[in-house]
Amino acid sequence: MPKTQLTKRDKPVVAILTGSPSDLPVVLKSREVLDDLDIPSDVRVLSAHRTPNETMQYIAAAEREGVEVFIACAGMAAHLAGVVAAHTTLPVIGVPIASGALQGVDALLSTVQMPPGVPVATVGIDGSKNAGFMAARIVAARHPEVRDRLRDHLAKSRSRYDSPDPSVPGQASQKPTKRPGRKR
Ligand code: RP5
Image 1: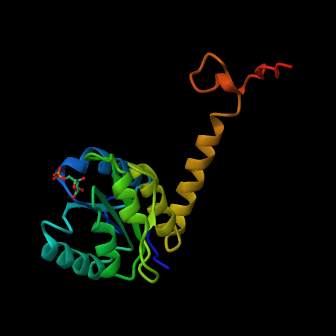
Image 2: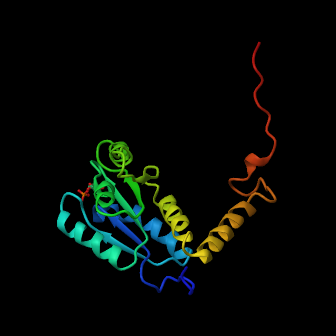
């Protein structure tokens, strides 16, 4: 078990890969989550189709440098997460990105339907935030302080429900509402 507390300034333990610069606005949401939890990460634009050699080299280097989990984001015929999973035994989280004619449905199916033995833990279309949280949960297995930070985060998100106030957006539904009766 590591002795020191993990901070953003340490060597990356999460590697975030994405297939195109055009994906970055969505992809960077997972980095924000990791930053907020003080977990060091590295973001790279690398494509399974356009830069396959560089992608493989990066995966090998990241493993050597102490990365514990990969997040791989791609749109359309999304092969990036699968390619990462083929080259490492570390956990891989796949994020299907909404783009092109099918707006992420193609990427979702490409990412989630992996053959047995080469798993990709797939989040929803554009589910970059949840990829960050899932990566944090994986990192927390080796870093207990991250588990504490995740617990704090969950407690904070629960506290929004402590005193429902209908004047606050999103809380109005806590008021008992009349449901339309069945017409007989
Ligand atoms: C995928 O194709 C990328 O992940 C991106 O979502 C999509 C389109 O890429 P660009 O043509 O915008 O580079 O490989």
